[in-house]
Amino acid sequence: MRLRKMRFLGLLMIILLLSGCRQQSSYDLQAAECAAVLAEKIPFADTLSPLSKEMGLVLYPVAAEDVAEHSIYVSTGATAEEIAVFAAVDSEAAERVKSAVLQRVEEQKASYAAYRPAELPKLEEPYLQVAGSHVIFCVSDHNDQVNKIVEQLLYGKEER
Image (tube, rainbow, N blue to C red; front, top):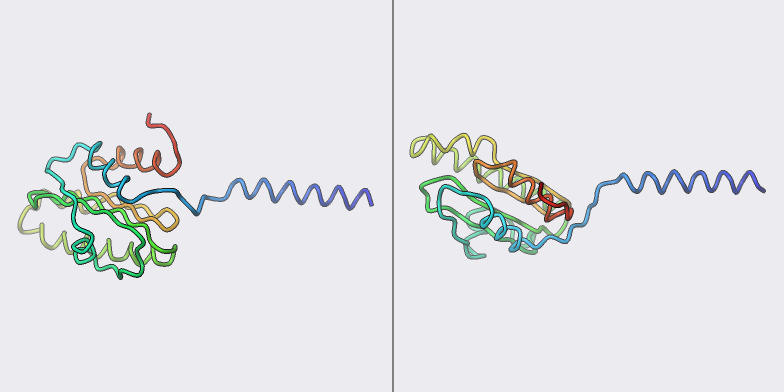
């Protein structure tokens, strides 16, 4: 009997330790807040303006039923700078949203290749993170700073 209890406690301890190592799958992230914070704190070269919800779903080929909330900021067109934050309905929808974001990147590359080739490096390595059902995308010259802000919003970590 004592051996069973010891095995049970040992197994329980392992389960608890392993569950502490798993990544968080649900985040309390508001798309509008995240996009607004990025727009405010990242030193963009161009002026970014919020896009209407309807235009956002035109710009990004995302099915409306895949998205619970989204917020998009676009530049004047003089640069490729952009912010798009999506809260998808689930993780599978988030993967579809990610594909739509990557499609948008390819369209922007084709557009800026002849118009403003100096913008292509930003589009070659944009910030793109999928966290649970959230997709955070930002085109800027400041991916490290974007990452710090996003981590703070997702995990409550303080900026360094």
